[in-house]
Length: 171
Image (cartoon, rainbow, N blue to C red; front, side, top):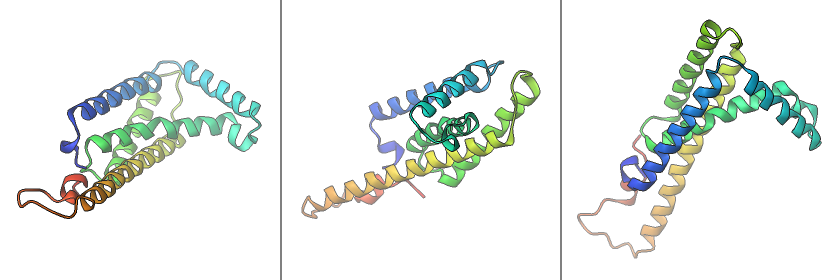
C-alpha cells in the first residue's frame, strides 16, 4: 500500500510516533552525560540476570548493544511505512550515516560521552531490521488486498486500479 493510500489518520499517527521517537532518541543520544543510559543499561542487565538469562545475554555490554539495535528499529520501520519508495538498502544507508554523525558529535562535542564503532554497527543493524520489517508489513498488506480483491468475484471495473498498484510500495 503506497504511502499516499494510507488514511490521513494513519499517516498522522505514524508521523507523530516517528517525531516522538526522534525527539526521545536525540535526547538520549545527545545528552551531555551518559548517566541516564548507563543507569538503564545496568538495571536492565540486572533484571535479565534476575530472570536467569545467561551472562552472554545479560552482560551490560551485550545489553547496551541490544538497546542500540532496538533504538534504531522504529526509525526505519515508521519511516518505511510513511515513505515506502526508498528500499531497505536506502534506509540502512541513512541509518549508518545518522549513527555515524551521532557518534562524531559524541566524540567531538560531548566530553562525558564515548563514541564507538560498535554503536555505529548496532544502530545500523537496527535500521536494517526496521526497514525489513516495514517491507514485510507492505507485503502482508498487499497480500491481504489481493485476497480481498479475489473474493469480490474478480469483477473489475475499467476505471479501477489493480490491487497491486494500490497496495504495493513503488519499487
